[in-house]
Amino acid sequence: MKFFVDTADTDAIRELAELGMVDGVTTNPSLIMKSGRDIREVTREICEIVSGPVSAETVALDAEGMIAEGRELAKIADNIAIKVPLTWDGLKACKVLSGEGRMVNVTLCFSANQALLAAKAGATFISPFIGRLDDINLDGMSLIADIRQIYDNYGFQTEILAASIRSVNHMAEAAKIGADVATAPPAVIKAMASHPLTDRGLEGFLKDWAKTGQKIL
Ligand code: E4P
Image 1 (cartoon, rainbow, N blue to C red):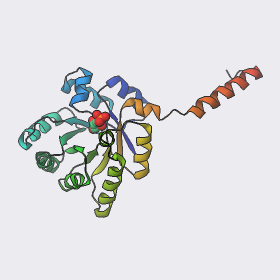
Image 2 (cartoon, rainbow, N blue to C red):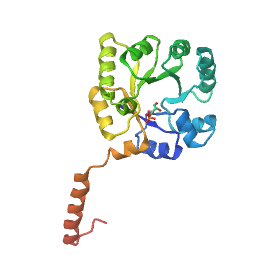
Image 3 (cartoon, rainbow, N blue to C red):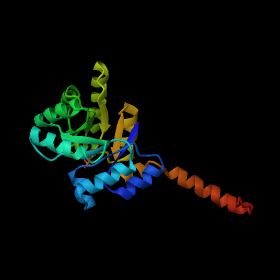
Image 4 (cartoon, rainbow, N blue to C red):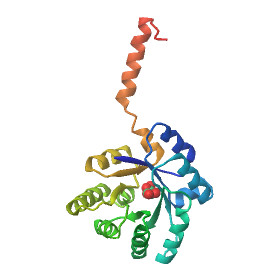
């Protein structure tokens, strides 16, 4: 499973990229707002750090506007994936932009039918939002499983980009189902390294090591 980082925080991206944990980045208008930076400037910097797909989101509501904004955002760098919402106009924009050979990430997907339409419209990535479905007492992870099954039934090449990931359990579950990509905040990716038994084991080993009086260096 590829790891995308869901942030516009370039320091956090850099830290994870140095460890080889970043295959791409996703941003959205809220994350750009949180960064407090200009969209072009921060997105360009991200594209310099990461060679994989970097999603930059359009904000127009009509297809024409999304297409124009998508072409503009694509000028930032060659690895831009244009993010459009899963609306009827978003699907039209996806069809045109993907037809131009651009990467398109169709976002705000909350149903299997929406994912099916995005694949038919030539999306490079479909972004089903797990956490936001869980927030309203629906099962976000079962949507990932449903889309996996549907895409595999028909050999769609659109990559399932599990999004709105809120916990380390979401990461493991998405990987078990076979999501192609998971995008998660840096804190969730770092938390994947933690386990209380690792901490307890380390503490025990260090106590015993101190009793030996030895040094390695
Ligand atoms: C994905 O591309 C979105 O930016 C993101 O995963 C949304 O996550 P949230 O629901 O935690 O805001």
